[in-house]
Image 1 (cartoon, one colour):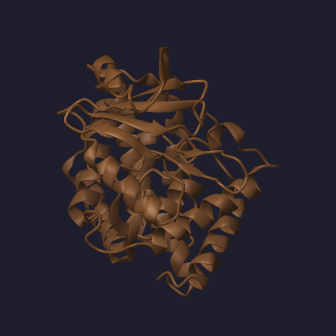
Image 2: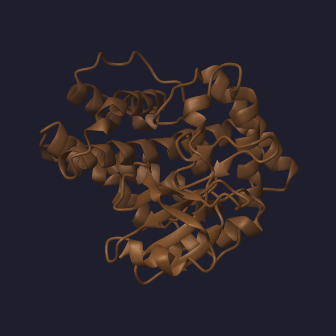
Image 3: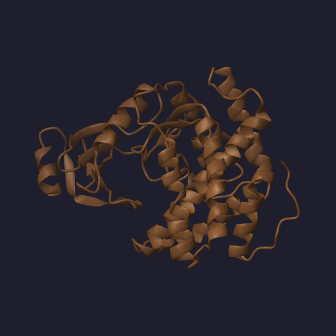
Amino acid sequence: MMDRWLDSLSDRFVLDRRSLAPASNDASFRRYFRIDAGKTAEVPSFIVMDAPPPQEDCRPFVHAAAVFDRAGVNVPKVLAADLDQGFLLLSDFGSTTYLSRLDAGSAPGLYRDALLALVGMQKASARGVFPDYSREILERELMLFPEWYLHRHKQVDLDDNQRRVLLDSFALILENNVAQTSVFVHRDYHSRNLMVLPPGCNPGILDFQDALHGPITYDLVSLLRDAYLRWDEEQVLDWAIRYWEMARQEGLPVTPDFAAFYRDFEWMGLQRHLKVLGIFARLHHRDGKDNYLKDMPLVLDYVLQVVRRYVDLAPLARLLETIENRTPSSGYTF
């Protein structure tokens, strides 16, 4: 079907069908292909998205692309679409991800660009554009952790007391998350979804189709506590402060006390990383995608770092240390 759809575009685009090749891997049912343009085209190539219904729906992608384009951030242009069949023709940002380029020399400039783009995206926020990142959605995501990570991956069945500790801790996490000011949330704003483009165009932003309206720290913690690479906490603090200062200057509703903001950042990250452990386990056990297993230890380290830091999360810290056979922490900071 995709071949016929590409043929139907021949009056608008010159596409070298022989060049069609996979462009990236995805954790969903979506597939991406790169296809060369004709020699007279202004660009060398395009991206073809195949999002097969009913597993995927292209409409949220098209909608979010238009919203973020109006916000002035760099997202792919939707050049042609067949929403019923799940086909899109997109502009091509190339194959150089932030993850492949980041090092001590390039990180300051690339992260400055990413923070500026994030602030610009958040400044465009308005209610009703994307669904709310509700408590119900946040809780449903958290429950992936006991279902897929603890039960399926670790083969741990919690007793009643342990389950109560987990659910009480989840309630505290959710209380913090839903109390944060809401803005547009990309939901996967990290090094694999940010592309290195020519100067003045960074970053190219991908994988935004699940955007919601929710906690202001969500995308920042996705970026700075990335599941695929680690930065020293001093560096994370530096970038978090830079974002916080940018956001305040641009009138975004961040809390005026940085310590309170950083606490929100950490508790939001805890929700995200518990969810990610569940998702990585599900990708392995249900979908046969084993490549995410290597990223679990870093995500677990993020979780333990936060639960060991806050007195209110001490019961959860002890539970996780028991499950993971980790040495108990010696104390709590806040």
